[in-house]
Length: 258
Image 1 (cartoon, rainbow, N blue to C red):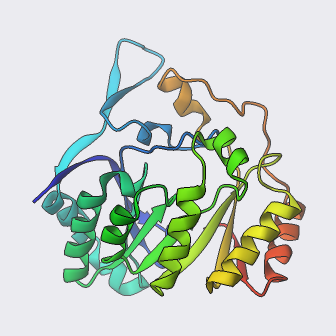
Image 2: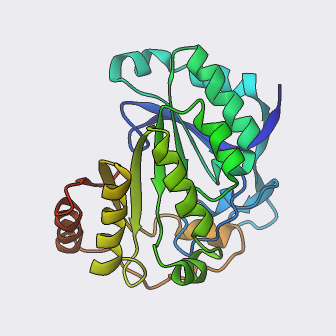
Protein backbone atom coordinates (compact mmCIF):
# COMPACT_ATOMS: atom_id res chain seq x y z
CA UNK A 1 0.00 0.00 0.00
CA UNK A 2 1.50 3.33 -1.02
CA UNK A 3 2.21 6.36 1.11
CA UNK A 4 1.70 10.01 0.23
CA UNK A 5 2.25 13.49 1.58
CA UNK A 6 -0.89 15.15 2.98
CA UNK A 7 -1.07 18.85 3.84
CA UNK A 8 -4.19 18.51 5.99
CA UNK A 9 -7.58 16.82 6.22
CA UNK A 10 -10.69 18.91 6.90
CA UNK A 11 -14.10 17.64 7.95
CA UNK A 12 -17.53 19.20 7.34
CA UNK A 13 -16.67 20.75 3.96
CA UNK A 14 -19.67 22.05 2.01
CA UNK A 15 -18.01 23.71 -1.00
CA UNK A 16 -16.14 20.77 -2.48
CA UNK A 17 -18.89 18.60 -3.92
CA UNK A 18 -22.39 17.55 -2.81
CA UNK A 19 -23.37 17.17 0.83
CA UNK A 20 -21.03 17.26 3.80
CA UNK A 21 -17.55 16.20 2.80
CA UNK A 22 -14.15 15.35 4.18
CA UNK A 23 -11.51 17.14 2.10
CA UNK A 24 -8.02 15.67 1.84
CA UNK A 25 -5.50 18.33 0.78
CA UNK A 26 -2.45 16.76 -0.84
CA UNK A 27 0.98 18.38 -1.13
CA UNK A 28 2.52 19.22 -4.48
CA UNK A 29 1.28 21.24 -7.46
CA UNK A 30 3.04 22.06 -10.75
CA UNK A 31 1.04 25.30 -11.12
CA UNK A 32 1.87 28.59 -9.43
CA UNK A 33 -1.42 30.46 -9.76
CA UNK A 34 -0.90 34.05 -8.62
CA UNK A 35 -4.16 33.95 -6.62
CA UNK A 36 -3.59 30.56 -4.96
CA UNK A 37 -5.22 30.50 -1.53
CA UNK A 38 -3.35 27.36 -0.44
CA UNK A 39 0.33 28.12 -1.14
CA UNK A 40 1.31 25.67 1.61
CA UNK A 41 0.20 22.85 -0.70
CA UNK A 42 2.32 23.89 -3.70
CA UNK A 43 5.70 22.41 -2.78
CA UNK A 44 5.94 18.62 -2.87
CA UNK A 45 8.02 18.37 0.31
CA UNK A 46 7.38 19.23 3.93
CA UNK A 47 7.89 22.87 4.91
CA UNK A 48 7.35 25.21 7.85
CA UNK A 49 4.77 27.88 8.59
CA UNK A 50 6.19 30.68 10.72
CA UNK A 51 4.25 33.04 12.96
CA UNK A 52 5.31 36.35 14.48
CA UNK A 53 7.91 34.45 16.48
CA UNK A 54 10.06 33.35 13.56
CA UNK A 55 11.95 30.90 15.76
CA UNK A 56 8.89 28.66 16.03
CA UNK A 57 7.66 26.88 12.94
CA UNK A 58 4.67 24.65 12.27
CA UNK A 59 5.44 21.70 10.02
CA UNK A 60 3.15 21.50 6.98
CA UNK A 61 2.87 18.05 5.44
CA UNK A 62 2.51 14.60 6.95
CA UNK A 63 3.36 11.29 5.32
CA UNK A 64 0.34 9.00 5.58
CA UNK A 65 -0.56 5.58 4.27
CA UNK A 66 -3.71 5.01 2.23
CA UNK A 67 -5.27 3.18 5.16
CA UNK A 68 -4.51 6.04 7.55
CA UNK A 69 -6.25 8.50 5.26
CA UNK A 70 -9.25 6.22 4.73
CA UNK A 71 -9.63 5.66 8.47
CA UNK A 72 -9.88 9.44 8.99
CA UNK A 73 -12.40 9.74 6.16
CA UNK A 74 -14.56 6.91 7.57
CA UNK A 75 -14.98 8.78 10.85
CA UNK A 76 -17.54 11.03 9.13
CA UNK A 77 -19.59 8.25 7.51
CA UNK A 78 -22.74 9.29 9.40
CA UNK A 79 -22.59 12.77 7.87
CA UNK A 80 -22.10 11.40 4.35
CA UNK A 81 -25.10 9.11 4.73
CA UNK A 82 -27.31 11.90 6.04
CA UNK A 83 -26.29 14.55 3.49
CA UNK A 84 -25.27 12.66 0.37
CA UNK A 85 -21.69 13.72 0.96
CA UNK A 86 -18.38 11.91 0.75
CA UNK A 87 -14.66 12.47 0.30
CA UNK A 88 -12.97 15.03 -1.94
CA UNK A 89 -9.28 14.91 -2.82
CA UNK A 90 -7.87 18.39 -3.33
CA UNK A 91 -4.47 19.98 -3.32
CA UNK A 92 -2.05 20.85 -4.36
CA UNK A 93 -2.75 18.76 -7.40
CA UNK A 94 -4.26 15.29 -7.13
CA UNK A 95 -2.50 14.15 -10.31
CA UNK A 96 0.90 14.90 -8.77
CA UNK A 97 0.30 11.95 -6.42
CA UNK A 98 -1.80 9.91 -8.84
CA UNK A 99 -1.13 6.40 -7.51
CA UNK A 100 -1.73 7.45 -3.90
CA UNK A 101 -4.88 9.34 -4.92
CA UNK A 102 -6.28 6.43 -6.93
CA UNK A 103 -5.74 4.00 -4.06
CA UNK A 104 -7.51 6.29 -1.57
CA UNK A 105 -10.45 6.73 -3.93
CA UNK A 106 -10.64 3.00 -4.63
CA UNK A 107 -10.72 2.17 -0.92
CA UNK A 108 -13.39 4.81 -0.30
CA UNK A 109 -15.58 3.42 -3.07
CA UNK A 110 -15.21 -0.02 -1.52
CA UNK A 111 -16.68 1.54 1.64
CA UNK A 112 -19.54 3.01 -0.45
CA UNK A 113 -18.27 6.56 0.06
CA UNK A 114 -18.94 9.05 -2.76
CA UNK A 115 -15.66 10.24 -4.26
CA UNK A 116 -14.73 13.56 -5.86
CA UNK A 117 -11.52 15.24 -6.98
CA UNK A 118 -10.59 18.88 -7.46
CA UNK A 119 -8.03 19.15 -10.24
CA UNK A 120 -6.37 21.60 -12.60
CA UNK A 121 -6.14 18.74 -15.08
CA UNK A 122 -2.40 19.27 -15.40
CA UNK A 123 -0.74 15.87 -15.60
CA UNK A 124 -0.26 12.95 -17.94
CA UNK A 125 -3.37 11.28 -19.32
CA UNK A 126 -2.15 8.01 -17.83
CA UNK A 127 -2.15 9.53 -14.35
CA UNK A 128 -5.49 11.24 -14.89
CA UNK A 129 -7.15 8.08 -16.20
CA UNK A 130 -5.80 6.11 -13.24
CA UNK A 131 -7.45 8.55 -10.81
CA UNK A 132 -10.68 8.89 -12.83
CA UNK A 133 -11.34 5.17 -12.61
CA UNK A 134 -12.34 5.56 -8.96
CA UNK A 135 -13.84 9.08 -9.13
CA UNK A 136 -17.59 9.73 -9.04
CA UNK A 137 -17.39 13.51 -9.58
CA UNK A 138 -14.69 15.64 -11.21
CA UNK A 139 -14.42 19.30 -10.20
CA UNK A 140 -12.23 20.56 -13.05
CA UNK A 141 -10.69 24.03 -12.73
CA UNK A 142 -10.22 26.06 -15.90
CA UNK A 143 -8.06 29.12 -15.19
CA UNK A 144 -7.89 30.59 -18.71
CA UNK A 145 -8.52 29.34 -22.24
CA UNK A 146 -5.70 31.37 -23.79
CA UNK A 147 -2.54 29.28 -23.37
CA UNK A 148 -0.15 32.26 -23.33
CA UNK A 149 -2.18 34.04 -20.66
CA UNK A 150 -2.44 30.77 -18.75
CA UNK A 151 1.35 30.48 -18.80
CA UNK A 152 1.72 34.06 -17.60
CA UNK A 153 -0.54 33.68 -14.54
CA UNK A 154 0.01 30.02 -13.57
CA UNK A 155 3.51 29.19 -14.82
CA UNK A 156 2.33 26.46 -17.23
CA UNK A 157 0.56 26.34 -20.60
CA UNK A 158 -2.94 24.87 -20.79
CA UNK A 159 -2.54 22.47 -23.76
CA UNK A 160 -2.27 19.41 -21.52
CA UNK A 161 -5.20 20.64 -19.43
CA UNK A 162 -7.65 21.15 -22.28
CA UNK A 163 -6.63 17.84 -23.86
CA UNK A 164 -7.30 16.03 -20.57
CA UNK A 165 -10.63 17.81 -20.21
CA UNK A 166 -11.71 16.60 -23.66
CA UNK A 167 -10.59 13.02 -22.96
CA UNK A 168 -12.27 12.94 -19.55
CA UNK A 169 -15.53 14.22 -21.03
CA UNK A 170 -15.56 11.25 -23.41
CA UNK A 171 -15.67 8.89 -20.43
CA UNK A 172 -19.07 10.29 -19.42
CA UNK A 173 -17.92 11.04 -15.89
CA UNK A 174 -20.00 13.51 -13.92
CA UNK A 175 -18.01 16.70 -14.28
CA UNK A 176 -18.34 20.33 -13.25
CA UNK A 177 -16.10 23.04 -14.67
CA UNK A 178 -15.01 25.59 -12.09
CA UNK A 179 -13.66 28.99 -13.05
CA UNK A 180 -11.83 31.06 -10.42
CA UNK A 181 -12.93 34.58 -11.41
CA UNK A 182 -9.86 36.81 -11.10
CA UNK A 183 -10.47 40.50 -11.98
CA UNK A 184 -8.32 41.66 -14.85
CA UNK A 185 -6.99 38.16 -15.45
CA UNK A 186 -9.74 35.88 -16.76
CA UNK A 187 -13.04 37.69 -16.12
CA UNK A 188 -13.52 39.03 -19.65
CA UNK A 189 -16.74 38.36 -21.53
CA UNK A 190 -14.72 36.60 -24.22
CA UNK A 191 -12.92 34.16 -21.91
CA UNK A 192 -15.96 33.21 -19.83
CA UNK A 193 -18.14 32.85 -22.91
CA UNK A 194 -15.56 30.66 -24.68
CA UNK A 195 -15.18 28.46 -21.61
CA UNK A 196 -18.95 27.99 -21.40
CA UNK A 197 -19.00 27.21 -25.13
CA UNK A 198 -16.34 24.52 -24.61
CA UNK A 199 -18.41 23.00 -21.79
CA UNK A 200 -21.42 22.90 -24.10
CA UNK A 201 -19.42 21.21 -26.87
CA UNK A 202 -18.16 18.54 -24.46
CA UNK A 203 -21.56 17.84 -22.93
CA UNK A 204 -20.57 19.25 -19.54
CA UNK A 205 -23.77 20.58 -18.05
CA UNK A 206 -22.60 22.73 -15.12
CA UNK A 207 -20.14 25.56 -14.46
CA UNK A 208 -19.29 27.07 -11.08
CA UNK A 209 -17.93 30.62 -10.89
CA UNK A 210 -15.67 31.10 -7.89
CA UNK A 211 -15.08 34.74 -6.96
CA UNK A 212 -11.51 35.73 -6.13
CA UNK A 213 -10.81 36.34 -2.46
CA UNK A 214 -7.64 37.22 -0.58
CA UNK A 215 -8.19 34.93 2.41
CA UNK A 216 -4.92 33.09 1.72
CA UNK A 217 -2.81 36.27 1.69
CA UNK A 218 -1.38 35.92 5.19
CA UNK A 219 -0.14 32.41 4.37
CA UNK A 220 2.42 33.85 1.97
CA UNK A 221 4.04 35.89 4.73
CA UNK A 222 4.13 32.83 6.97
CA UNK A 223 5.90 30.93 4.18
CA UNK A 224 8.22 33.89 3.45
CA UNK A 225 6.84 34.28 -0.07
CA UNK A 226 5.59 37.32 -1.98
CA UNK A 227 1.87 37.69 -2.67
CA UNK A 228 1.61 39.15 -6.17
CA UNK A 229 -2.02 40.35 -6.08
CA UNK A 230 -1.70 42.54 -2.99
CA UNK A 231 -4.10 45.27 -4.13
CA UNK A 232 -6.63 43.15 -6.02
CA UNK A 233 -10.25 43.32 -4.85
CA UNK A 234 -12.94 40.67 -5.16
CA UNK A 235 -15.30 40.96 -8.15
CA UNK A 236 -18.61 42.70 -7.43
CA UNK A 237 -21.88 40.82 -7.07
CA UNK A 238 -23.02 42.65 -10.19
CA UNK A 239 -20.06 41.30 -12.18
CA UNK A 240 -20.53 37.76 -10.90
CA UNK A 241 -24.22 37.79 -11.79
CA UNK A 242 -23.39 39.13 -15.27
CA UNK A 243 -20.92 36.28 -15.83
CA UNK A 244 -23.47 33.77 -14.51
CA UNK A 245 -26.02 34.93 -17.08
CA UNK A 246 -23.34 34.76 -19.76
CA UNK A 247 -22.71 31.08 -18.97
CA UNK A 248 -26.44 30.35 -18.82
CA UNK A 249 -26.88 31.91 -22.27
CA UNK A 250 -24.92 28.92 -23.62
CA UNK A 251 -27.46 26.51 -22.15
CA UNK A 252 -25.18 25.62 -19.22
CA UNK A 253 -26.30 25.52 -15.60
CA UNK A 254 -24.30 28.15 -13.72
CA UNK A 255 -23.68 28.68 -10.04
CA UNK A 256 -21.79 31.34 -8.12
CA UNK A 257 -19.60 29.59 -5.56
CA UNK A 258 -18.66 25.93 -5.18
